[in-house]
Length: 124
Image 1: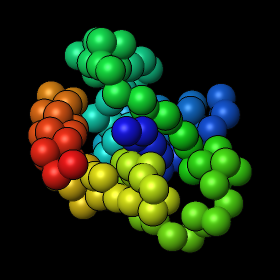
Image 2 (image 1 turned 30 degrees about the vertical axis):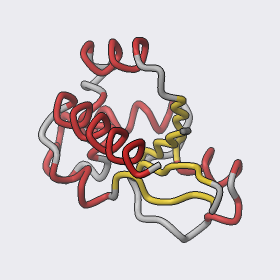
Image 3 (image 1 turned 45 degrees about the vertical axis):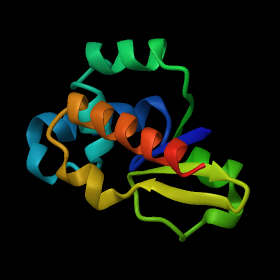
C-alpha cells in the first residue's frame, strides 16, 4: 500500500519561509493542518519523524505543485491537505482534509493511520 501525503502548500524555500512566518503570526488561520501536525515552525516533529523512519508503509510526500506535476489528472480534484491511497482503481482518499483538520497532534495522526491501515488489511 502506498500512501500519498499532500500538504496544502507549495514547494520552495521562499514558500517554506512564508509558511513558517504564517504559523507564528497567525496560527489559527494557517491553511495546512498536515503541516502543522507534522512540523513545528522550523523542523519535523520528533514522534512523526520516528514513525516515518520505523514504519513499513510506503509513504510519499508532496506539496501541491509537486503533486500536480506528478499527477496532472488530479488537478482541482482534491481539497488539501489530504492523504491518498494508491489502489488498483487509482488514487482514493485515505484521510480527508476534514479528518486532518480535526486532529490535534502527530500522535493522533499516527494512531489514525495505523487504524485505517489495519481496517484496509482486514478488508482484503
